[in-house]
Amino acid sequence: MIVYNQISGNIAKTWLWLFVFFALVLSLGWIFSYVYDQPDFIIAAALLSSVGAIVSYWYSDAIALSLANAKAIERKTDFPQLFRIVENLCIAAGLPMPKLYVINDTAPNAFATGRDKNHAALAVTAGLLDMMDEREVEGVIAHELSHIGNRDTLLMTAVVILAGLVSVLSDLFLRMQWFGGRRSRDNDREGQNILFLIGIVVSILAPFAAMLIRFAISRRREFLADANAVLITRYPEGLASALEKIRQTGRVSYRASAAIDHLYFTSPFGSDRNKNASAMRQTPWYVTLFSTHPPIEQRIAALKNMAQ
Image 1 (tube, rainbow, N blue to C red):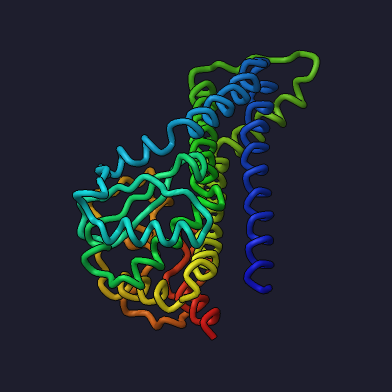
Image 2 (cartoon, one colour):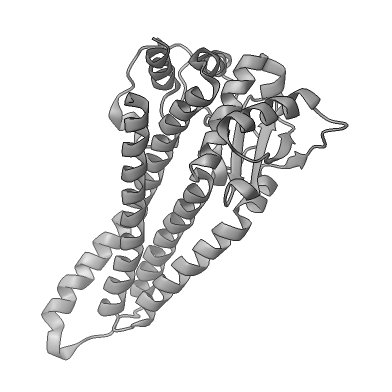
């Protein structure tokens, strides 16, 4: 019951943050429209948000797989054991079989992408298959299948696009001010000046706030996927062992793209791990603000609590 309550609470909070993201984009458009007496800003914000949502819905998987240099594999000739593991876990999770890809990277990792469970793809690195035993691979795969079942793959792509829109609108506002694009309103000069100052502050702080919101959503989804993986495998020790191996080896990826960092099972750049830290150590909250993944030691501790 505790796990299901955690899942329900995390889903509600995550969608709340996504609503905040949309509100932030539209608010920026409205402020800039008023300051410059140009309704085009709010229209552009709405249109760009819509176009971004369409692109993320239809092409998020192809973009992510291309950035990761992932190669499709065939069951008859490649990785039959991986196919068997994924098939068994899909049956347990009630999900259709995703397309499988392998990334030629020695760092152990994996990610899932796709707009829904019927159009999903799962990519694993060669390093993951080489380093992990079968129970550990099952834990990682179950985690990624949980992202597919929870629609995290679509959600996280939309969040990245919205964060990019915030940065674009903020940068455009500052550039227009630099080149003197501001218009005046004689009948409301004082109110416009106040909003102009607000616009300057917002345009500077909004990209930073958007980045923090994006990271917070990503971290929350990782804890949720860990909990769901335990429900699928009934074996939290396998996932905990996989995380411990990744933390201890300290391997990082030199092939991963920062644009899809948040999609991976653990940060491909090692920002979520401390090889010398105690597994039970609680990383300060201000450190985790700038990470797309929660600290590995916190994830391991949560899994050990589930095992008990």
